[in-house]
Amino acid sequence: MPIAPSSLARYEAMRKKIVENCGENYKPEQALEYIKKNYPNVSTQNGYFAALRYFAIDDDGDDSYYARQYTEYAKAIRADKERKEKSQTLPEARVKKMLTWPELQQAYHKAKELCEQGKLEFDKFLLVALYTQINPIRADWAEMKYIKDASEIEAGKNYCLFGTTELNTTPSECKSRVKEIPGRFILQEYKSSKKYGRVDIEIPRHLDAILRKHWNGGGFGGNNYVYKGTSNSLCHAVSRVFEQVTGKATTISLIRHARVDDFYKTDHTIGEKEDLARSMLHSSVVGERYRTAVNPEIP
Image (tube, rainbow, N blue to C red; front, side, top):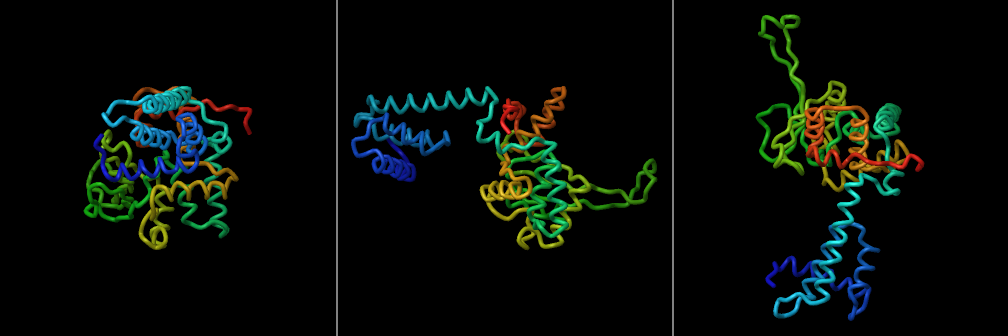
């Protein structure tokens, strides 16, 4: 079966890991037990099953008994994942890290107070603000750059464009000679960009003030960025700062769950649901899956 050299190298590394832990003559049942115990991520498990299936296929290209076993394992794991998603029930370990949306608002005020007292770095306070003061997106703040003029925008990149003012020339709006143009986040590179394309999110005035102070201080680490680093490092940074502020190492995913849960406590039109989904940069179907059935008995 033809396979790219990079994929073959990855498959060989996976098989080597199985051999090291299960023996040269491992059986599918042994491999399954090891993979499920050591790799809880479903995508990683499927990667291992694909690798083992590749090496179990007969020379003539036909599936062997073992190859069919690995295929069945992968199907069963995917089916279990889909069942859990549709049940909208979070695992107990994740529930213990979850904060409600009102608790997240309290976390923002506590973080602000700690920052003002010099007990929390401003970079960290900004992360709390970004995930509580607007509808929370994924880790798309990573590598987002501050700009002051729309002419600086390049395709495929995310920006924080500061607001500005201009002379008000509309006679019916002569209450003020100056018209404010709100700042906005410009999202072009994110998971569901094929669905929505470029999304502009207006920045609330109080968040704009926080961002301006951050920018005036040089941005993240003096790099003129909202956050300078990978999305993975941002996820870890968010969990650490919320643990510092609240005692719970909540995650970006759980914060998004909390917002959707809070939103669905009251009735909304289809249009309102779609607006929320767009502002969180996911589809309305994904938004429904973010709704959770949380066990209230778990503290």
